[in-house]
Image 1 (cartoon, rainbow, N blue to C red):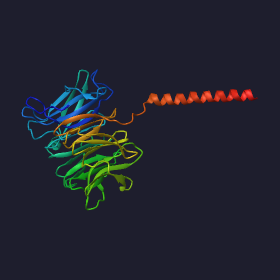
Image 2: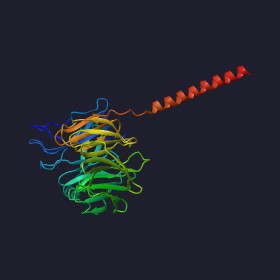
Image 3: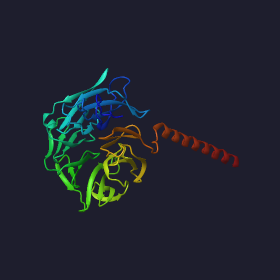
Image 4: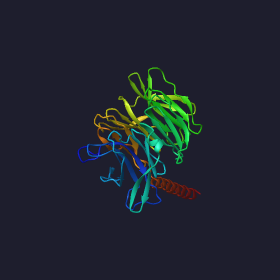
Length: 366
């Protein structure tokens, strides 16, 4: 799906994120599901940010963008990470210089990306992580220099400004209830932050031979877990922690290769792990077993990001060498509402037939 990076072409997709378009308007005939793609520069093209429509039936992205923004004239400043506000009308893009914010304006005849003037953020320095809270009221960024900033959204009033949160950010996520933020460092450490208090809560414990790398909170709303990838000696493990006390529940070896990125589906049923050889696997959270393997999706290049589609069992993954790929997941299909009602109706009819047969048989015996 990515550009080939040659003369006259846009650069490879460096990061991507799903956007669920609001139901209260927008261009007719355009998919409700969009994808924001950040492109690196080429000899003839600057870094770009594109909006693409997603064809759910074909599991493909449109060839031509609905909207495009030039990120800057410098080739060394490509988009690094994208976070989309839950409302689907705003997004943030981390770059080598800072963080840029955009409003998505949906009009009858098109979609527009409007840059928002946030000079302090745009010059904040190289950013690694960006995230919105689930309720859309908080926004956080983590930098290469280890600087953590948490803001109220959309006012951007500061909640926390911690220049020495880490040596350098590795990964970051916000809990489903928007209460906690977890962050990991390139040195293998990890911290939990209480967002509303604007303060650190606890450092996750680890032994000297352990490095905590990727992190994601559970999303099903019933099991308050934290998932982290853990390198312990030569072993690559996925561990689960209870967020009521931040203690380890257990860990399991799900991939023999080093993990480069981690993601959780919106319904919390699946984990996706991308590794440094370009393979990805999807894990059933309840069983903690691999349900899907896709090998050589990115042909030996580390997967830099992976994100579940909000409406179907598919993921979009990116790597700096090969760009973006859509992968359909070979996992059990979810029950649809009409299927549930059909089963209930069948049970009701079966019960009525059995009751009638029993009642008729009882009358004959009398």
